[in-house]
Image 1 (cartoon, rainbow over the protein chains, first blue to last red):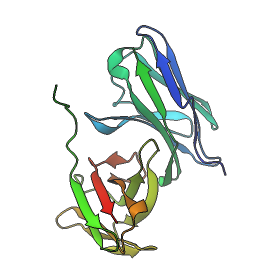
Image 2 (image 1 turned 120 degrees about the vertical axis):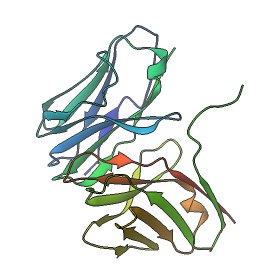
Image 3 (image 1 turned 90 degrees about the vertical axis):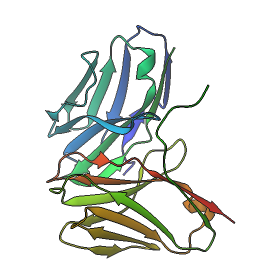
Length: 112
Length: 111
């Protein structure tokens, strides 16, 4: 298995623009998680899905953030409009029955 | 100006020494714990896990100890190598929900 695949690896965008981050979980995994990592706050949970259904989005910082999982093999995290304080590394992870949590390589987002 | 951010504990060891990294977790209901290694520019990499019905688990060169009484987790790395240099995170979860991460410890191995 290729593991959790995230794209793009790097994204530089201007403030106010829409940003979409993508994630392909490991096949057969029924949980998908989005995390954000910054120097200030470490690794924070944003949202997670079970069987494509959002379970807990309490970590989503603002309405500017939204996440979808239209099917078992794809999820997106969208920020609109983006702001400089959204600059961070965003990780996607997947697991099966709450076990074997595997992380992707992350997307480094820079908003200028 | 001064850099503001998480002040991660740092452990500096010599190559060949044994390393012990400690973690205090917060939720007494957590039943599954994982140690991750994160190298610069990469995602967290699974090292070893342990369930709450165990107090010790061993892998290759690594051992995890769990003390539920004081909510403490430790990672022991035997014969530490320069390639072990990274940031190490403990993570906890309850009943298959999302992982909650600790703040991390930087391990620096000198040869």
